[in-house]
Length: 314
Ligand SMILES: NC(=O)C1=CN([C@@H]2O[C@H](COP(=O)(O)OP(=O)(O)OC[C@H]3O[C@@H](n4cnc5c(N)ncnc54)[C@H](O)[C@@H]3O)[C@@H](O)[C@H]2O)C=CC1
Ligand SMILES: O=C(CO)COP(=O)(O)O
Image (cartoon, rainbow, N blue to C red; front, side, top):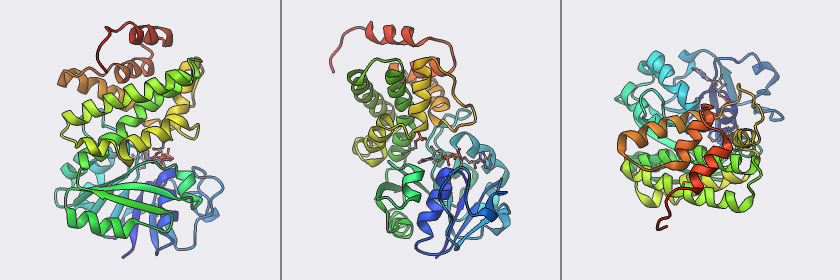
């Protein structure tokens, strides 16, 4: 059974390349002017296999399984316009973020727009460039319907993509969204010259915040400790391949950052700060990243706020 990917950015294109090892893939993008060259400028150096059909015509997306690889803040608008034509299918969210307008994760947006769809989430530690180069990668496939989770796990695993499955959609989704916020904080610590020990503190205390918020969203704690949570947190906080990490580095160093780059953690930090206020949760690192991203506070001020918090049990 062939699959389709909606969103011809770096990640959607990389997933299409990997899936093409198993059969034909249709890749939809709004800007596909590059398609004749078979090289997407968002994924330079990768030639698309011949069995990937690139289109900007949504009517050609007729497959039963569709991966949605759009940025989290674009997904709601896309679904409002096009959700009806995708209803009833297997819709797999590949976005890592929390929608600022609704404070919901992508799976909730998809379920609202496409009530008859089977909704799943594909997430975990994976840089698009690594997947597209055929490097070994392990991800989490989450779907509340256990049978559908198993079927999608088999359909979407490829020679270099090993999928584990879970029915904890909220946990998988929250891990992927929140690690981006903490990756910005880790990058900011490095960019400001605070050192590797400070980064380790940010990763660990950031993980505690991820667990706290995820628990409040009914996620299972063990999901946060898996690929979609801890796994992706470690990857993103330690690699300059991460856009969130590099954005954080720029914030920490007081440098500009290319505003066209997709940095999911910046908007998600603001969503997390709003959720923290709504739910009465203490999420100091994430809340400070929201302030830094909005330019409301400076790096040195953020550090002093963190260091001067009351001492407490770990
Ligand atoms: N790049 C990576 O290594 C990974 C990315 N992801 C996630 O995948 C999602 C997409 O990221 P990337 O592909 O990397 O971003 P990207 O910046 O490479 O591409 C985003 C694509 O979405 C398109 N787009 C944006 N708004 C749209 C709209 N309203 N309608 C139609 N198309 C729209 C853009 O034209 C662009 O092609 C993000 O949530 C990201 O966190 C997840 C894992 C790895
Ligand atoms: O989600 C990712 C790796 O798992 C990609 O991270 P960035 O969006 O920070 O580049």
